Length: 307
Image 1 (tube, rainbow, N blue to C red):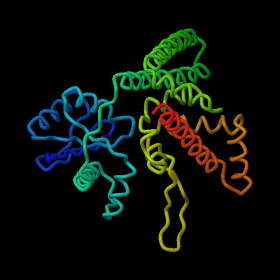
Image 2 (image 1 turned 120 degrees about the horizontal axis):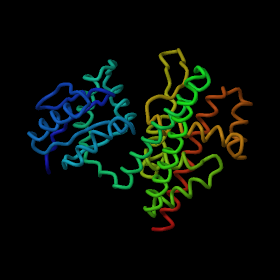
Image 3 (image 1 turned 45 degrees about the vertical axis):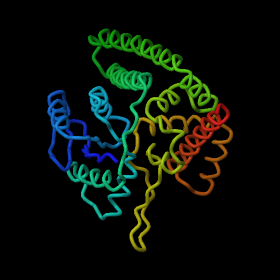
Image 4 (image 1 turned 180 degrees about the vertical axis):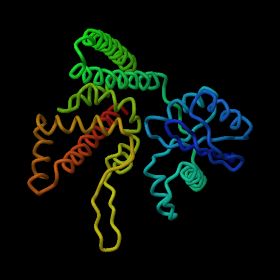
């Protein structure tokens, strides 16, 4: 059996905290820092990089590692969090997180994660760009409401340009999905659920490829909609959601809001929860879980029919 030399990396927006048996340290999350990191990894026999699958910051690193034929193991952040709690780790700093991630990798004997297909990588890049344009468009529209008259023409031109770019990006997204038979089918199936539109389907295809491979608990944790308690002794803290993939969570929230109005099954479910005294946000999160698990069931059943 091949012995893996694990290299745990805790990824932040601007830095990478690294823990390994042979070296540890912090690297800037830019081209210079990444090149330094890869040089360190190249000097290790049988390396396996381990990082959390957050659906965000890790993709630039992963793309580079895959291009260099360096194996990567992506792990569910909820599993690492549970492991940390089981060993009594309470501190929350990047270096400590990297060390926890390393111990987790060793204890679980992690194996490499297959790289995503080229279509999925393209879809992720296009969806990232769509998010950037959408955020910029919202900012420009806000400026339009409170800017002096002399700047309105300029702002209007920028808005028009961004809207044109958004249309172009969305055409590319549809083309990528249509080029892959499975993605096209899954997108169509998901959009048959009232409340789930194109954007939700695109987001799940791009950022939640594990939709049909994880069990129910793992899936809701990865999406960031699993309830966590804050109990201690007799004290019963509020249940809340945390972690997971923010982009997936955001799109599911929008889908739940729409479904609570237009989908009879979700509307009835939310109404029952509200009548029991559950807060609105609590009911929305429950609806998000219900929608996500329903999508999982639909796609798994489709896979069984084709098997």
